[in-house]
Length: 125
Image (cartoon, rainbow, N blue to C red; front, side, top):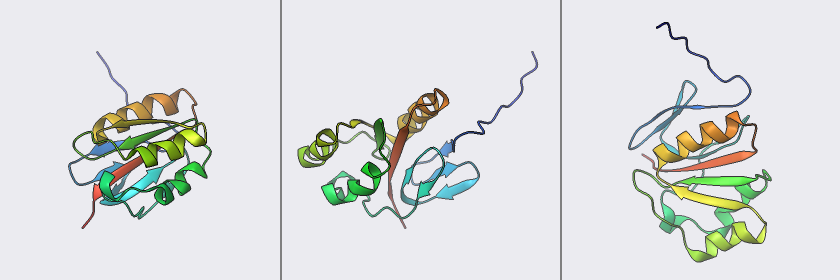
């Protein structure tokens, strides 16, 4: 069977997820970041859910997403109720999962044309 690689051209995609990094297209990120369909917010300050606060989610909410995927590293870890409430007050759904699951879910939703934003928490250097 002949296989061909088709890369999405209308959104940025995650190519690889490692325990301490995420590669978007051909760029490797080792610090937390936010990925929208067409751009990246680099050096997003939180490194884990304990350092995530309502002020940290403001850049995400400014993108006016339908849904936010929160990749919490190699394991799923839920943010505080205060952080979750910041999304709910704006009517934005949030799904919490490990980084690999967040990358896969992002690919599916973005390929459907959904306005999805994924925030990856990475331990940094």
